[in-house]
Image (cartoon, rainbow, N blue to C red; front, side, top):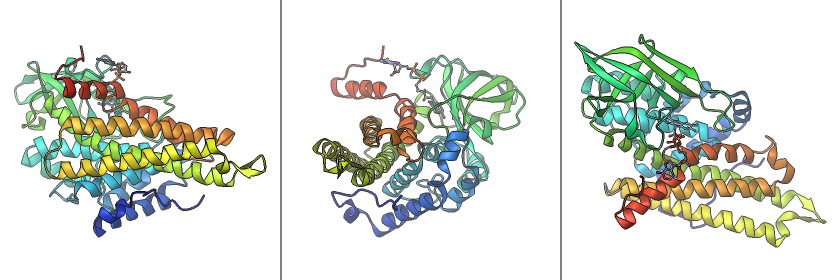
Length: 388
Ligand SMILES: Cc1cc2nc3c(=O)[nH]c(=O)nc-3n(C[C@H](O)[C@H](O)[C@H](O)COP(=O)(O)OP(=O)(O)OC[C@H]3O[C@@H](n4cnc5c(N)ncnc54)[C@H](O)[C@@H]3O)c2cc1C
Protein backbone atom coordinates (compact mmCIF):
# COMPACT_ATOMS: atom_id res chain seq x y z
CA UNK A 1 0.00 0.00 0.00
CA UNK A 2 1.13 3.58 -0.67
CA UNK A 3 2.50 5.65 2.22
CA UNK A 4 -0.25 7.31 4.23
CA UNK A 5 -0.49 11.03 3.51
CA UNK A 6 -3.47 12.04 5.61
CA UNK A 7 -6.43 14.11 4.53
CA UNK A 8 -6.30 17.90 4.84
CA UNK A 9 -8.83 19.45 2.45
CA UNK A 10 -9.30 22.63 4.50
CA UNK A 11 -5.52 23.18 4.74
CA UNK A 12 -5.51 22.85 8.52
CA UNK A 13 -1.76 22.35 8.38
CA UNK A 14 -1.56 26.12 7.94
CA UNK A 15 -3.01 26.69 11.40
CA UNK A 16 -0.78 24.15 13.10
CA UNK A 17 2.54 25.26 14.51
CA UNK A 18 5.75 23.83 13.13
CA UNK A 19 6.15 21.86 16.36
CA UNK A 20 2.64 20.40 16.10
CA UNK A 21 3.27 19.31 12.50
CA UNK A 22 6.58 17.78 13.48
CA UNK A 23 4.98 15.81 16.31
CA UNK A 24 2.17 14.64 14.01
CA UNK A 25 4.65 13.53 11.35
CA UNK A 26 6.88 11.79 13.89
CA UNK A 27 3.96 9.73 15.19
CA UNK A 28 2.79 9.07 11.62
CA UNK A 29 6.23 7.67 10.78
CA UNK A 30 6.27 5.64 14.00
CA UNK A 31 2.93 4.06 13.04
CA UNK A 32 4.16 3.34 9.50
CA UNK A 33 7.44 1.84 10.73
CA UNK A 34 6.35 -0.02 13.87
CA UNK A 35 2.62 -0.72 13.67
CA UNK A 36 1.20 -1.10 10.16
CA UNK A 37 2.97 -4.36 9.32
CA UNK A 38 2.34 -6.13 12.62
CA UNK A 39 -1.03 -4.95 13.86
CA UNK A 40 -3.19 -7.41 11.94
CA UNK A 41 -1.31 -10.34 13.46
CA UNK A 42 -1.78 -8.80 16.92
CA UNK A 43 -5.47 -8.36 16.20
CA UNK A 44 -5.87 -11.93 15.02
CA UNK A 45 -3.80 -13.33 17.89
CA UNK A 46 -5.62 -11.21 20.50
CA UNK A 47 -2.53 -9.50 21.89
CA UNK A 48 -1.07 -6.02 22.28
CA UNK A 49 2.29 -5.28 20.58
CA UNK A 50 4.20 -5.03 23.88
CA UNK A 51 7.49 -4.26 22.16
CA UNK A 52 6.28 -0.74 21.30
CA UNK A 53 5.57 0.28 24.92
CA UNK A 54 9.13 1.56 25.61
CA UNK A 55 9.05 3.38 22.26
CA UNK A 56 5.82 5.14 23.24
CA UNK A 57 7.64 6.26 26.37
CA UNK A 58 10.77 7.38 24.52
CA UNK A 59 8.68 9.42 22.09
CA UNK A 60 6.97 11.15 25.03
CA UNK A 61 3.51 9.95 23.99
CA UNK A 62 2.38 8.70 27.43
CA UNK A 63 0.63 11.47 29.39
CA UNK A 64 1.97 13.82 26.71
CA UNK A 65 -0.16 16.81 27.72
CA UNK A 66 0.73 16.63 31.42
CA UNK A 67 3.31 18.95 32.99
CA UNK A 68 6.28 17.86 35.11
CA UNK A 69 7.18 14.40 36.43
CA UNK A 70 9.01 13.58 33.18
CA UNK A 71 5.88 14.12 31.05
CA UNK A 72 6.24 15.92 27.72
CA UNK A 73 3.99 18.90 28.64
CA UNK A 74 2.67 19.27 25.08
CA UNK A 75 -0.28 21.48 24.13
CA UNK A 76 -3.68 19.89 23.55
CA UNK A 77 -3.60 20.17 19.77
CA UNK A 78 -0.33 18.26 19.64
CA UNK A 79 -1.82 15.72 22.05
CA UNK A 80 -4.88 15.33 19.82
CA UNK A 81 -2.74 14.88 16.71
CA UNK A 82 -0.85 12.11 18.50
CA UNK A 83 -4.14 10.32 19.20
CA UNK A 84 -5.26 10.79 15.60
CA UNK A 85 -2.09 9.24 14.24
CA UNK A 86 -2.02 6.35 16.73
CA UNK A 87 -5.60 5.38 15.96
CA UNK A 88 -4.85 5.56 12.25
CA UNK A 89 -2.72 2.53 13.17
CA UNK A 90 -5.25 0.84 15.45
CA UNK A 91 -7.86 1.83 18.04
CA UNK A 92 -6.21 -0.63 20.48
CA UNK A 93 -2.93 1.29 20.28
CA UNK A 94 -4.69 4.61 20.90
CA UNK A 95 -6.69 3.01 23.72
CA UNK A 96 -3.46 1.94 25.43
CA UNK A 97 -2.11 5.49 25.28
CA UNK A 98 -5.47 7.07 26.26
CA UNK A 99 -5.84 4.81 29.29
CA UNK A 100 -2.25 5.33 30.41
CA UNK A 101 -2.35 9.12 29.98
CA UNK A 102 -5.98 10.20 30.41
CA UNK A 103 -7.25 7.60 32.85
CA UNK A 104 -4.23 6.67 34.97
CA UNK A 105 -1.64 9.47 34.85
CA UNK A 106 -4.22 12.28 34.76
CA UNK A 107 -6.02 11.24 37.99
CA UNK A 108 -2.70 10.73 39.78
CA UNK A 109 -1.48 14.10 38.47
CA UNK A 110 -4.71 15.92 39.41
CA UNK A 111 -5.87 14.11 42.54
CA UNK A 112 -2.77 12.34 43.85
CA UNK A 113 -0.44 13.16 46.75
CA UNK A 114 3.06 14.42 45.97
CA UNK A 115 4.42 11.04 47.03
CA UNK A 116 2.08 9.21 44.62
CA UNK A 117 3.04 11.56 41.77
CA UNK A 118 6.77 11.06 42.37
CA UNK A 119 6.40 7.32 42.63
CA UNK A 120 4.16 6.59 39.65
CA UNK A 121 4.19 9.36 37.05
CA UNK A 122 7.80 9.11 35.77
CA UNK A 123 7.48 5.30 35.55
CA UNK A 124 4.17 5.52 33.68
CA UNK A 125 5.49 8.27 31.37
CA UNK A 126 8.44 6.07 30.40
CA UNK A 127 6.27 3.00 29.88
CA UNK A 128 8.19 1.13 32.60
CA UNK A 129 4.87 0.79 34.41
CA UNK A 130 1.48 0.09 32.86
CA UNK A 131 -1.74 1.37 34.38
CA UNK A 132 -5.44 0.58 34.12
CA UNK A 133 -8.64 2.36 35.12
CA UNK A 134 -11.34 0.38 36.90
CA UNK A 135 -14.73 2.05 36.85
CA UNK A 136 -17.16 -0.24 34.96
CA UNK A 137 -18.71 -3.18 36.81
CA UNK A 138 -20.67 -6.18 35.54
CA UNK A 139 -23.97 -4.52 36.58
CA UNK A 140 -22.99 -0.85 36.26
CA UNK A 141 -21.73 0.48 32.92
CA UNK A 142 -23.49 3.63 31.74
CA UNK A 143 -24.54 4.30 35.33
CA UNK A 144 -21.30 4.02 37.34
CA UNK A 145 -22.77 5.86 40.32
CA UNK A 146 -24.50 2.61 41.29
CA UNK A 147 -21.18 0.76 41.70
CA UNK A 148 -21.00 -2.01 44.26
CA UNK A 149 -17.23 -2.08 44.78
CA UNK A 150 -16.52 -0.52 48.14
CA UNK A 151 -13.75 0.20 50.61
CA UNK A 152 -13.85 -0.03 54.38
CA UNK A 153 -11.39 1.74 56.68
CA UNK A 154 -9.44 -0.61 58.93
CA UNK A 155 -6.59 0.87 60.97
CA UNK A 156 -3.88 2.07 58.55
CA UNK A 157 -5.55 0.37 55.57
CA UNK A 158 -8.55 0.33 53.34
CA UNK A 159 -10.06 -3.05 52.53
CA UNK A 160 -11.60 -3.32 49.05
CA UNK A 161 -14.28 -5.75 47.87
CA UNK A 162 -16.00 -5.94 44.49
CA UNK A 163 -15.46 -6.62 40.78
CA UNK A 164 -14.69 -4.50 37.75
CA UNK A 165 -15.23 -5.56 34.15
CA UNK A 166 -14.11 -4.50 30.65
CA UNK A 167 -10.91 -2.99 32.02
CA UNK A 168 -8.33 -2.17 29.35
CA UNK A 169 -4.88 -3.47 30.33
CA UNK A 170 -6.28 -4.88 33.59
CA UNK A 171 -4.25 -8.08 33.74
CA UNK A 172 -1.00 -6.50 32.56
CA UNK A 173 -1.18 -3.39 34.73
CA UNK A 174 1.34 -2.62 37.44
CA UNK A 175 -1.08 -0.18 39.03
CA UNK A 176 -4.86 0.02 38.84
CA UNK A 177 -6.79 3.23 39.50
CA UNK A 178 -9.88 1.75 41.11
CA UNK A 179 -13.05 3.69 41.86
CA UNK A 180 -14.94 2.41 44.88
CA UNK A 181 -17.36 3.71 47.49
CA UNK A 182 -16.11 4.66 50.93
CA UNK A 183 -19.00 5.45 53.28
CA UNK A 184 -21.19 5.87 50.19
CA UNK A 185 -18.82 8.42 48.45
CA UNK A 186 -16.87 7.46 45.32
CA UNK A 187 -13.11 7.60 45.92
CA UNK A 188 -10.05 6.65 43.85
CA UNK A 189 -7.60 3.99 45.07
CA UNK A 190 -4.25 2.89 43.67
CA UNK A 191 -3.99 -0.88 43.78
CA UNK A 192 -0.60 -2.29 42.89
CA UNK A 193 -0.02 -5.57 41.09
CA UNK A 194 0.61 -8.44 43.50
CA UNK A 195 -1.46 -6.96 46.33
CA UNK A 196 -3.07 -9.80 48.24
CA UNK A 197 -6.77 -10.13 47.46
CA UNK A 198 -6.40 -8.50 44.00
CA UNK A 199 -6.69 -10.79 40.97
CA UNK A 200 -7.53 -10.40 37.29
CA UNK A 201 -9.05 -12.49 34.50
CA UNK A 202 -8.46 -11.82 30.82
CA UNK A 203 -11.69 -11.33 28.85
CA UNK A 204 -11.66 -13.52 25.75
CA UNK A 205 -13.68 -13.84 22.55
CA UNK A 206 -13.84 -10.15 21.64
CA UNK A 207 -14.31 -9.42 17.94
CA UNK A 208 -13.29 -5.80 18.47
CA UNK A 209 -10.18 -4.12 19.91
CA UNK A 210 -8.43 -7.47 19.80
CA UNK A 211 -5.01 -5.81 19.81
CA UNK A 212 -5.89 -4.48 23.27
CA UNK A 213 -6.06 -6.48 26.48
CA UNK A 214 -9.38 -6.36 28.34
CA UNK A 215 -9.83 -7.83 31.83
CA UNK A 216 -11.95 -8.30 34.87
CA UNK A 217 -10.55 -7.09 38.20
CA UNK A 218 -11.51 -8.89 41.40
CA UNK A 219 -11.05 -7.52 44.91
CA UNK A 220 -11.58 -9.88 47.79
CA UNK A 221 -10.64 -8.40 51.15
CA UNK A 222 -7.89 -6.56 49.28
CA UNK A 223 -5.97 -4.50 51.82
CA UNK A 224 -4.13 -1.41 50.62
CA UNK A 225 -2.29 1.24 52.67
CA UNK A 226 -4.25 4.40 53.37
CA UNK A 227 -1.58 6.33 51.51
CA UNK A 228 -2.83 4.67 48.28
CA UNK A 229 -6.09 6.59 48.21
CA UNK A 230 -6.13 9.62 45.86
CA UNK A 231 -6.55 12.37 48.48
CA UNK A 232 -8.13 15.02 46.27
CA UNK A 233 -10.77 12.91 44.46
CA UNK A 234 -14.22 13.00 46.01
CA UNK A 235 -17.43 11.85 44.34
CA UNK A 236 -18.41 10.83 40.81
CA UNK A 237 -16.79 14.00 39.43
CA UNK A 238 -13.39 12.33 39.97
CA UNK A 239 -13.78 9.50 37.44
CA UNK A 240 -15.94 11.64 35.14
CA UNK A 241 -13.19 14.27 34.89
CA UNK A 242 -10.78 11.51 33.75
CA UNK A 243 -13.30 10.33 31.16
CA UNK A 244 -13.48 13.87 29.78
CA UNK A 245 -9.72 13.73 29.16
CA UNK A 246 -9.87 10.33 27.50
CA UNK A 247 -12.95 11.17 25.42
CA UNK A 248 -11.10 14.21 24.11
CA UNK A 249 -8.44 11.83 22.78
CA UNK A 250 -11.09 9.52 21.35
CA UNK A 251 -12.62 12.36 19.31
CA UNK A 252 -9.24 12.88 17.64
CA UNK A 253 -8.40 9.20 17.49
CA UNK A 254 -11.59 8.13 15.74
CA UNK A 255 -10.83 10.73 13.08
CA UNK A 256 -7.51 8.97 12.48
CA UNK A 257 -9.27 5.61 12.02
CA UNK A 258 -11.66 7.28 9.57
CA UNK A 259 -8.70 8.75 7.66
CA UNK A 260 -7.13 5.29 7.37
CA UNK A 261 -10.39 3.84 5.98
CA UNK A 262 -10.84 6.71 3.54
CA UNK A 263 -7.25 6.34 2.34
CA UNK A 264 -7.73 2.62 1.69
CA UNK A 265 -11.10 3.14 -0.03
CA UNK A 266 -9.77 5.91 -2.26
CA UNK A 267 -6.73 4.01 -3.49
CA UNK A 268 -8.72 0.80 -3.93
CA UNK A 269 -11.42 2.62 -5.94
CA UNK A 270 -8.81 4.08 -8.25
CA UNK A 271 -7.19 0.72 -8.96
CA UNK A 272 -10.11 -1.74 -8.95
CA UNK A 273 -11.46 -2.25 -12.48
CA UNK A 274 -15.06 -3.33 -13.04
CA UNK A 275 -17.08 -2.82 -16.24
CA UNK A 276 -13.77 -1.81 -17.94
CA UNK A 277 -13.21 1.22 -15.69
CA UNK A 278 -11.81 1.97 -12.24
CA UNK A 279 -14.76 1.82 -9.83
CA UNK A 280 -13.75 5.39 -8.81
CA UNK A 281 -15.29 6.54 -12.11
CA UNK A 282 -18.79 5.56 -11.06
CA UNK A 283 -20.99 8.27 -9.57
CA UNK A 284 -22.22 6.13 -6.68
CA UNK A 285 -18.63 5.42 -5.63
CA UNK A 286 -17.70 9.09 -5.87
CA UNK A 287 -20.73 9.99 -3.76
CA UNK A 288 -19.47 7.65 -1.01
CA UNK A 289 -15.95 9.11 -1.21
CA UNK A 290 -17.35 12.66 -1.14
CA UNK A 291 -19.36 11.89 1.99
CA UNK A 292 -16.34 10.33 3.75
CA UNK A 293 -14.08 13.24 2.85
CA UNK A 294 -16.63 15.81 4.01
CA UNK A 295 -17.25 14.08 7.35
CA UNK A 296 -13.50 13.71 7.98
CA UNK A 297 -13.02 17.42 7.29
CA UNK A 298 -15.90 18.33 9.64
CA UNK A 299 -14.44 16.08 12.38
CA UNK A 300 -11.03 17.69 11.94
CA UNK A 301 -12.57 21.15 12.34
CA UNK A 302 -14.44 20.05 15.45
CA UNK A 303 -11.24 18.61 16.93
CA UNK A 304 -9.18 21.66 16.19
CA UNK A 305 -11.67 24.06 17.76
CA UNK A 306 -12.12 21.70 20.71
CA UNK A 307 -8.38 21.77 21.28
CA UNK A 308 -8.43 25.57 21.25
CA UNK A 309 -11.19 25.76 23.86
CA UNK A 310 -9.42 23.11 25.94
CA UNK A 311 -6.28 25.19 25.77
CA UNK A 312 -8.20 28.32 26.85
CA UNK A 313 -9.62 26.50 29.88
CA UNK A 314 -13.23 26.91 28.65
CA UNK A 315 -13.80 23.33 27.54
CA UNK A 316 -16.69 21.52 29.24
CA UNK A 317 -17.51 17.81 29.35
CA UNK A 318 -20.46 18.60 27.06
CA UNK A 319 -18.14 20.07 24.42
CA UNK A 320 -16.22 16.80 24.48
CA UNK A 321 -19.42 14.73 24.33
CA UNK A 322 -20.40 16.37 21.05
CA UNK A 323 -17.03 15.63 19.44
CA UNK A 324 -16.77 12.06 20.78
CA UNK A 325 -20.33 11.26 19.71
CA UNK A 326 -20.07 12.81 16.27
CA UNK A 327 -16.59 11.69 15.32
CA UNK A 328 -16.97 8.09 16.42
CA UNK A 329 -20.37 7.82 14.73
CA UNK A 330 -18.95 9.09 11.45
CA UNK A 331 -15.75 7.08 11.72
CA UNK A 332 -17.87 3.94 12.00
CA UNK A 333 -20.06 5.02 9.05
CA UNK A 334 -16.93 5.76 7.02
CA UNK A 335 -15.42 2.38 7.93
CA UNK A 336 -18.61 0.60 6.88
CA UNK A 337 -18.78 2.53 3.63
CA UNK A 338 -15.09 1.84 2.91
CA UNK A 339 -15.68 -1.84 3.66
CA UNK A 340 -18.46 -1.80 1.10
CA UNK A 341 -16.24 -0.16 -1.55
CA UNK A 342 -13.62 -2.86 -1.07
CA UNK A 343 -16.13 -5.53 -2.00
CA UNK A 344 -15.11 -9.01 -0.88
CA UNK A 345 -11.60 -7.76 -0.16
CA UNK A 346 -13.18 -5.61 2.55
CA UNK A 347 -13.83 -8.66 4.70
CA UNK A 348 -10.18 -9.74 4.72
CA UNK A 349 -7.19 -8.60 6.74
CA UNK A 350 -5.39 -7.67 3.51
CA UNK A 351 -6.77 -4.19 4.13
CA UNK A 352 -7.07 -2.35 7.47
CA UNK A 353 -10.70 -1.34 6.94
CA UNK A 354 -12.48 -4.36 8.47
CA UNK A 355 -10.26 -4.18 11.57
CA UNK A 356 -11.00 -0.48 12.04
CA UNK A 357 -14.71 -1.12 11.52
CA UNK A 358 -14.76 -3.81 14.21
CA UNK A 359 -12.65 -1.72 16.58
CA UNK A 360 -14.92 1.29 16.22
CA UNK A 361 -17.86 -0.74 17.55
CA UNK A 362 -16.07 -0.73 20.94
CA UNK A 363 -15.08 2.91 20.60
CA UNK A 364 -18.75 3.76 20.05
CA UNK A 365 -19.65 1.97 23.29
CA UNK A 366 -16.84 2.79 25.69
CA UNK A 367 -16.29 6.08 27.50
CA UNK A 368 -20.02 6.80 27.30
CA UNK A 369 -22.07 5.14 24.59
CA UNK A 370 -23.31 7.15 21.60
CA UNK A 371 -26.75 7.36 23.20
CA UNK A 372 -25.43 8.44 26.60
CA UNK A 373 -23.68 11.33 24.83
CA UNK A 374 -27.01 12.16 23.14
CA UNK A 375 -28.52 12.38 26.63
CA UNK A 376 -25.65 14.56 27.87
CA UNK A 377 -26.22 16.93 24.94
CA UNK A 378 -29.99 16.75 25.39
CA UNK A 379 -29.52 17.75 29.03
CA UNK A 380 -27.27 20.62 27.97
CA UNK A 381 -29.77 21.89 25.38
CA UNK A 382 -32.98 21.54 27.38
CA UNK A 383 -31.80 21.67 30.96
CA UNK A 384 -33.77 18.45 31.52
CA UNK A 385 -31.86 15.29 32.49
CA UNK A 386 -33.35 12.25 30.71
CA UNK A 387 -31.05 9.53 32.03
CA UNK A 388 -33.72 7.92 34.24
C1 LIG B 1 -13.11 -2.99 24.64
C2 LIG B 1 -13.61 -2.22 25.83
C3 LIG B 1 -12.72 -1.62 26.69
C4 LIG B 1 -13.18 -0.95 27.83
N1 LIG B 1 -12.28 -0.39 28.71
C5 LIG B 1 -12.73 0.10 29.90
C6 LIG B 1 -11.79 0.54 30.90
O1 LIG B 1 -10.57 0.54 30.68
N2 LIG B 1 -12.27 0.94 32.10
C7 LIG B 1 -13.62 0.98 32.39
O2 LIG B 1 -13.97 1.35 33.51
N3 LIG B 1 -14.53 0.58 31.44
C8 LIG B 1 -14.11 0.15 30.22
N4 LIG B 1 -15.02 -0.28 29.28
C9 LIG B 1 -16.44 -0.31 29.63
C10 LIG B 1 -17.28 0.74 28.91
O3 LIG B 1 -16.99 2.03 29.35
C11 LIG B 1 -18.76 0.34 29.09
O4 LIG B 1 -18.97 -0.81 28.30
C12 LIG B 1 -19.71 1.44 28.72
O5 LIG B 1 -19.70 2.46 29.68
C13 LIG B 1 -21.15 0.92 28.56
O6 LIG B 1 -21.53 0.17 29.65
P1 LIG B 1 -22.21 -1.28 29.43
O7 LIG B 1 -21.38 -2.05 28.50
O8 LIG B 1 -22.47 -1.83 30.77
O9 LIG B 1 -23.57 -0.98 28.68
P2 LIG B 1 -24.96 -0.53 29.36
O10 LIG B 1 -24.76 0.62 30.26
O11 LIG B 1 -25.63 -1.75 29.90
O12 LIG B 1 -25.75 -0.05 28.05
C14 LIG B 1 -26.35 -0.96 27.14
C15 LIG B 1 -27.19 -0.13 26.14
O13 LIG B 1 -28.19 0.59 26.85
C16 LIG B 1 -28.11 1.96 26.54
N5 LIG B 1 -28.46 2.75 27.72
C17 LIG B 1 -27.99 2.65 28.98
N6 LIG B 1 -28.57 3.56 29.77
C18 LIG B 1 -29.42 4.27 28.99
C19 LIG B 1 -30.31 5.37 29.22
N7 LIG B 1 -30.41 5.95 30.41
N8 LIG B 1 -31.02 5.83 28.18
C20 LIG B 1 -30.91 5.28 26.95
N9 LIG B 1 -30.10 4.24 26.66
C21 LIG B 1 -29.37 3.76 27.68
C22 LIG B 1 -26.68 2.20 26.13
O14 LIG B 1 -26.54 3.36 25.31
C23 LIG B 1 -26.37 0.90 25.38
O15 LIG B 1 -26.84 1.01 24.07
C24 LIG B 1 -14.58 -0.88 28.09
C25 LIG B 1 -15.49 -1.45 27.17
C26 LIG B 1 -15.01 -2.10 26.06
C27 LIG B 1 -16.00 -2.71 25.09
